[in-house]
Length: 493
Image (tube, rainbow, N blue to C red; front, side, top):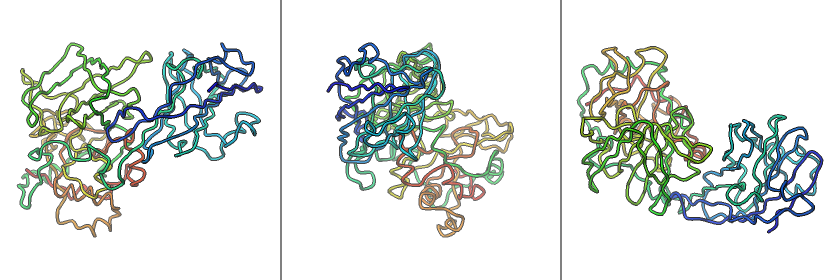
């Protein structure tokens, strides 16, 4: 299909009609839908073909660009996310604003702002220096069986140049949609909807009816510094989880720090190669995988068929497409979640306590099924030097990023249990909803391990980068676990 261009004062208009087809999934439980190969023939309706290759947004004419994705033939399931990606030709750090358009806008269009759908959510294209891909979350704009029409408007008077459809398939605007497929029952359609690590893992072993309470339990719990309210913020400083399969293409990740490469059999980890000196890792990393918000920029990838698990800290992509990270690791979800040391006694890298990122992570399917079958990961800290965990560590931790020298501070690896005598009725009276009750029950049965220092007191939930729509549908957010009393915890062994 030929692209159609119209000349309007102060506006460059592009009608981008592209069928969407299902491709090989980059996640085993989520089908990825992308634009089909685009027709790159020259512009029509008297438009200069050279100009047709560029979308100009802003500048002295206050121009805007309009993108239309038609024929949204999505597979049966629920839209998890949609991401608009455009190729930036400008080298200056110029961004743009994006809004959804009215239906039948070509007939009613009188100017870029008049075409915007009243009340539609505004999102932005980031102002980054240099040429390359930039993107934004377009999930609220995607509806099953309907076209997607977006207005790209200037965020300033500076000119932003983007590659159009006629620039070629390598740089044409695209929409990447993830649709969760499979039956709607809890966990169905999610091949990795299970707890990671072996049944004998300390993460998966219940505490039991008569645990040994540490003699310094009360002092240790009282020494937890910072805000003494348990938070559960999935929007930043936590872990997106991407599920891949054997057909997913490999990408190279250049590391500047450490790569902990654990080896073993199908059921047991046996050794670790502690790689330094700018190691290079080959990982099934999709070009649309997003890191967690926050300076830690973490990401987890799991091959559901083989159990291979990769995690990265401070992962980033350059404008040329190169992928770099500070630290990373390779592990396997079939092992016990307690990685071995390297040949020279080095502890497993990346995470504060030397454990994999999946350890203790709460995922949406667990809340939906009403049961978490493992211990949780717990982090805390505040404004004062001794608000953090101790620099000491105990099993299952193999190191600590804690900095407190208070003798009462909890070591990383310490296991806390919510008072099992606290009833659900009492928790409801404190304001706990259904999701919080599921979390509280796991804290009573499995407890939570001190695993990181943090700027707040929190448990770890899967990042909204991969679980945003799920958390929204379940009503889970930062304050979900705040009704659970920290002072009813005890340190058990």
